[in-house]
Length: 302
Image (cartoon, rainbow, N blue to C red; front, top):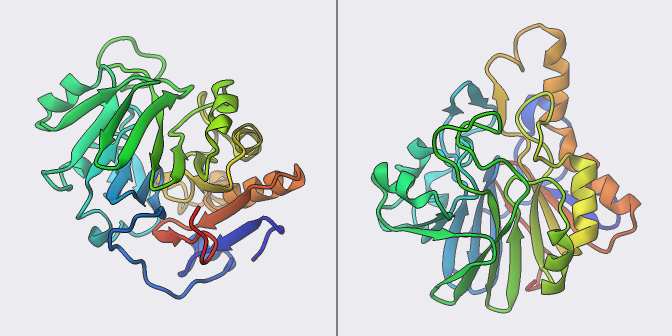
C-alpha cells in the first residue's frame, strides 16, 4: 500500500497478527558485497548495511527473547549476519547491546562502542573493540564511521540507576562510496539533527516506537520521528524499532492491553509515513517489515 506519493511500504511475508498486507517484493535478499548502500531490516534496531565494501550490523538482537521481551516475528536468517565486518553498538541497554547475540557473530568482527564502554565489553570476552565519542571518527577500509550525539540514557540498567556500566549513547554516520547513511540509535529530538542535515544524508534510519504499550524518555514516537526527518532532510527515511518485541504474554493473554499491543506492532511506521507526507517533506519513507530487505529506488544509487 502506498501511503503517499513519498512513502512505500514494502516487503514479502505476512505482517504480525493478521494485519492486512501492505505490499510485496519478490526478490530474495542479495548478501553479496557491494559498493553502494544496501539495507536489510532484521528487526528492532538491527539493520544490515552494506556500504563501501563493508558489511555493518547495528545493535544486533538475533535471539527469540531478551529478558522479559519476546520476539513476535521469526529470528533473522543467519546468512544475514554470518559475514559481518563491523558491529555498531549505540548504547548499553540490553535490547541494543545483547551479549548473547554478539556471541553468535564472527569472532573476526570489529565492535564499535560508545567511549567508556570498551572495558566492559572486553571483560565479556570481546577483543577487537574500538570506542567512539560523539564527533570522533574511525575508518574501516573505505568506510568512514562517525559517532554522533544521541539524546538517550547510556546506563546499562536505565536512567534511574547510577551504579554499574555507563557510557553516553551515540548514533552513527556511515560514509563511503559517495553515500551517507545515518543510523540514529535510540534518541529523542535534539538540535544536532539540524547540523547532520548539512552532510546531505542519503538514508536516515530512525526509531518510531519501542517494545511496550508506552514510550519512556529518550525515544521518538511517529510524530517526533517525522520532525526528525524535517530536521535531517534525508533522501530516504527507514523506520525501525517497531514490530519486533513485546513483553511476554501481552499479545496473547485476554486483557485490555492485548488489542493495544497488537496495534502498536503494526501502526507506528505507517503513522510515521503519513506524518512525513503531511509535512510536505521531499523525503521518501520506505517501510520494510522485520526480516525484510529495504528496497530503495530501483536503479538509483543513493
